[in-house]
Image (tube, rainbow, N blue to C red; front, side, top):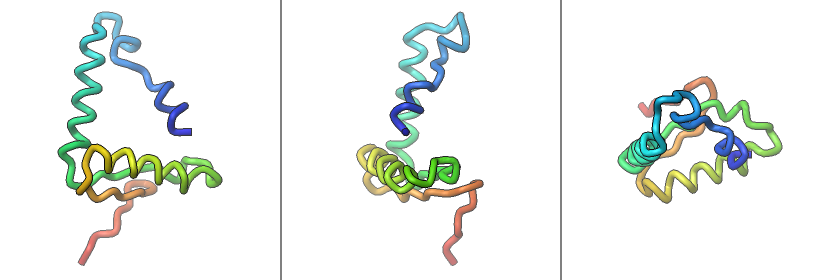
Amino acid sequence: TFEEYMGRIDTISSIDAAATPDEDKEIASLLLQQIEFANVVVLNKVDLIPEAEREATVKKLTAFVKTLAPSALVLPTSRSKVAMPQ
């Protein structure tokens, strides 16, 4: 699930022994700010989510993005293929 995946993501300090916990917080803050100020968020590689979990997971991710950026357009994609409006 998404929650399990997020729990496995390496932090900067786990990758770089010289990094500090403060740097981890800075990276997390930067990532959240990128979502908060986004007009469009592309959720790529949704095809890698098991089919039985895909719809619910995409809904959760979309809801999470919308809490940070209510007006952002959220586009679930596979292989970064996004249909362009004409």
